[in-house]
Image 1 (spheres, rainbow, N blue to C red):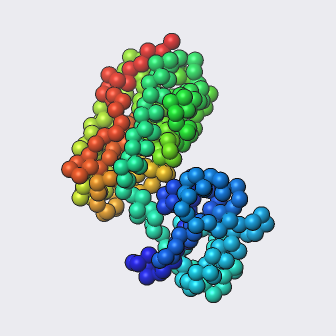
Image 2: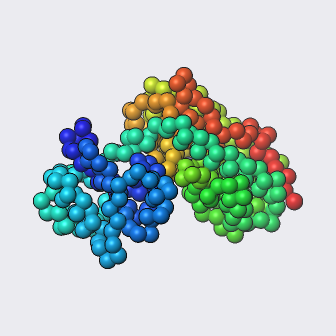
Image 3: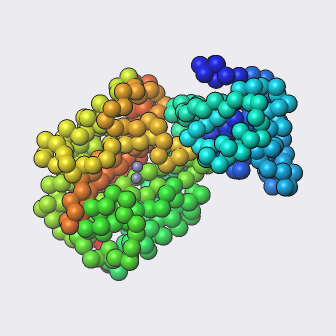
Length: 351
Ligand code: ZN
Ligand code: ZN
């Protein structure tokens, strides 16, 4: 706020509100000035707020009072004439109603106001991500051990979600991707009724959500003798992934991590088959900053948590991706995920 030289801000992205207050509900905005923080909420949340944020000042909107009018009351009482608003979260409609409800206040658009804080995780956040990783890994191990050829992609996705919940997670961090054979050529394949036994391999990309924090992993499973082509591509992707992870330490530009992994895939002649960035931050959102992609000059810093997930995709054949979650530490990195990923780890016996 000091950088923007504006003395007040209205936080409308619910994950940003949660990050700043600890409140886990939604439909609430946070108004921040030099002196106060006021949560503009409604009566559904007052009991929850007493538990989660007992010290937070509230403006409880009565039924029938529009959000924009409740915001206008709070802003008017503060006497602030300029308010930062989050242009990545405000819809055109909400922006228009806010502008209409307080015509004398200038809404100053900004981006990354809270995201710039969220990019570096504190110890509690890292602990929550570790738990989310553990739940995802345990769920995977159970599902892997019971894998059957007659199970559909959808069955496996459901089984992962079920196991994540049994292990204490709130659910999946995103709808799991289970992609058999040629379906794996689609980086964001949606599970279908294709069966595990219909092809030699399956790509599984899944994660857990715990205390609102996310994990995100990808593993390949081979249900037959390892096909020669699979082995060649898998080894390339694995070498690329290890090269990317090895490059992670504070002070390295994000694009250089992407480059370290991408070079391995390019040298294998598969550069055109790797059509997405190397990785992304995880936290309250499944995709957040930092972005490990080309043209990202920003430097890694301790406390950032990123995925490293190179892939190669060949339409008509399938795809291979390997994804781990990595914490940037003071002197390098720590891989938070621990599921085996050597070629031999992909082999699974199905019944
Ligand atoms: Zn993923
Ligand atoms: Zn990912």
